[in-house]
Image 1: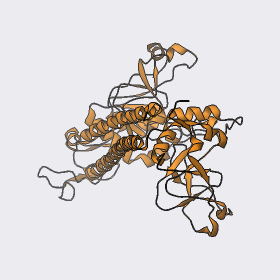
Image 2 (image 1 turned 90 degrees about the horizontal axis):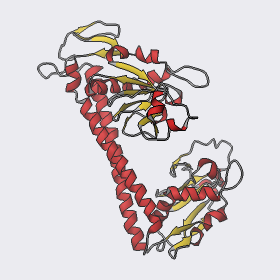
Image 3 (image 1 turned 135 degrees about the vertical axis):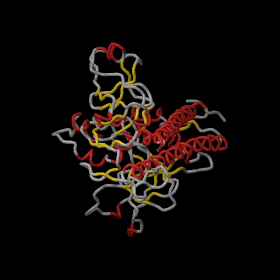
Image 4 (image 1 turned 90 degrees about the vertical axis):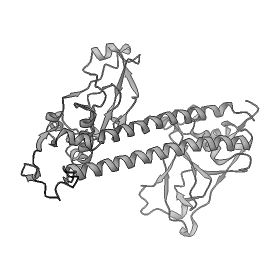
Length: 403
């Protein structure tokens, strides 16, 4: 053990404060992503006085199923108001916060190396629980408190920037959807005099979707697109289909109403050749067709292949791609509700092709600058990706911290 490595158990103590008198009503849970979340547990008939109270700068963890989940759920409670949680969770706090900072310890728990070590010590068959004693015997690097404060400050500045970018992306999407609805649903796009078209007396004509501006038409997604393609999965039994990084390969779980700048897996040239996977160009609009993700959409910002559960919609340019993306996003609830099937609900490619879409002038699509909004979203997403890499590097360097 390095000189500045100490046992976790030397710095923490268990807390077992019960909710006697039912003074605390704020019920919380613990997620595998190491966060406190709103509890969805059924507590009818439960003795809530037996629940544990957790307070500011205290930790809760789960030592069950660590090996199965390959991660130990543990989180630092930062709220000012106390909460209650299941008595199954150990609650602990740092004995002397002047020696070991709570935020520094939480950084250590966030490291992937910590989770791997916890899995190594986890026992108990299928569930793979971690004994409390083994958890306490795990070690961590403990530099001088001033050094801890320095690295915590650096780490939190990165997290704040990630959070800011995430909020900006959300606001951008809200703005874009509001703009799309104002122009292409309420038909209040600027007319030749800069006035809102419909409320200024712009001419409307009947269509199968109701009244639409004169000169517009009703089409389908298939007619709107230059081409539509689905993907494929190379055989997992043939290693050289997967043993290189020739082509990004996207799964439906990665489609989350986002822009795709990277994929979790890759396939080889041989894998592409020997499967029905196809290379999709940048700005392809994607829709997930199967399972709980059915109806989710994304825009590719890299050339990529996909599995067969993705429908790729290729448009003429970035503005038309953005127009289609927000059209599908605005109608996502209805589209997702049309997923049918047995064990796994799905949307057919035929259904997606027949989704109706209004066809305004292409110049009007460009004027909305929806394409520019997508590009800004891509820029922020790439910055988040870079910041996440920096934060992981910072966490990994904790192991080499010296006084």
